[in-house]
Length: 628
Ligand code: ADP
Ligand code: MG
Image (cartoon, rainbow, N blue to C red; front, side, top):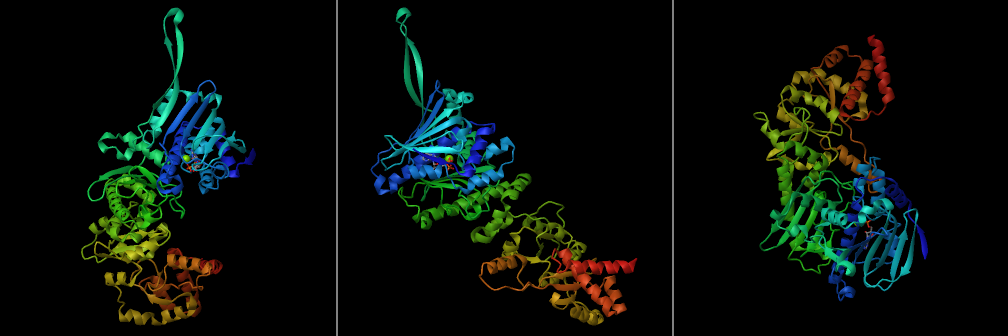
């Protein structure tokens, strides 16, 4: 017998399971049945692909027995089973990042916290909500030695050798006194119907029935052991749409996703013809916690003729649709298809492409309901943007799904299509302003001319926008233009500054250039300003902020030299009174002060960092002093 201690995180988790009062403890049964089902899936797959297990004759089944007197509930399967190492790895010293994540997400709100169970792959431990002791007896398929895992959930567990005839696992729960309800035939049936009706394997419930026989003196009590199948075991996706209730779809989703919320929507499709397959996809209401992690879990399971093949293939759908949960079940793939060759499979490529179109068209439907779509977009908008970047085939459709705030949208977010419908007569482009802070964008002096001309400007303030949007180029044949660009200025037809003005300001500009030196790339007159005296714009040939960030990261990793920070172009408003006064004063020292202040002011409005904040404050104070 060997004693082991649980990993710290597991202990924390167990402590939570044991000492918190969860509102729906019954989900422990769903978790154990789902583990049994996974174990059957795994063995079924191996009997098709693994030489050593090919001769195993095997009818996948799950059995539930209970003992009302002793308060014991047992769930067993004849699936893959576990050997000693598996037990150590899976039920004790798990190093799953999900568990840590789960613990960090706990809110203290019991209802919310219990909803997180399972979503983070902590399913097995939920059994300690109802059990004071658990014994797992298990034998791995193809191996001789069976093992027992024993724990009361308080810091330690034991593993010992034992006898077991068939492969698979038996999870024996010694229920707490107050959890007696789970040794009731009807209660168990109720829970299984609710959560596990459509797992693809039969679940048998064993119970005893007492009958009386004979009359009077001869009356005898006869105890009969019986069993019945208590779930439909029909893979839900194979059932015709018309025979399925909304509730069934929803429960199936919860089983599949470990999400305790209802799905936002689902798409159930049966395709017949040259290729035959069924797909059932769900769009969740909320983004899963690992959506933006590189090691996210794929949400789609692949089946071949109802036999589970894999839930670990990130290529079944394009990666930007990784928030979609569901099932693909193909009739045409060979059953013994190895997971490795799936990648280049032509059949799967066809299914992937058709599924992608289906899902996009469902999202288009969602977009018809503004409120509903807002919720969706908040959760998954970033993924759609990734799609614009990566899915060339569906780019146009995905572009239509994007939403942005604008200088005229009054807090709402609008589509490119709406933008186009509102374009002014003769307007040549879709104008946008890109930056990291929406509030700064809204106050940018660059907007002034556009406001005056009543032109709409979209704000791209999402971090990912700076990478995706420059690639977009155009929407529905209308070019996208940053109002920061030369082209946008030319559109306004106001880039020409007349010769007299140029002459008037020549010396001042030269003096500013000299004073600011290395701080700027150029000092020039601007036609895009109305209220503000100055603004900074970027040279379109320079890398933008997002590219700089990337290059810096690469530099930090030793993948390239340091690149100098690009310098801004300072533009001055020739119609502003500060500028006209400067022309009159012609005072070098004063010019120096003002030049820096105008640059610093423009930088602040742009959201750029000041190089020397102290110097800026000093200058400002000096000026204040003079003005009082
Ligand atoms: P998850 O199912 O999300 O992986 P669980 O906590 O429910 O997390 O289970 C942990 C692991 O224990 C499983 O991944 C599996 O490897 C193993 N396991 C649990 N139950 C069984 C079972 N009945 N048969 C075989 N392995 C099991
Ligand atoms: Mg599980």
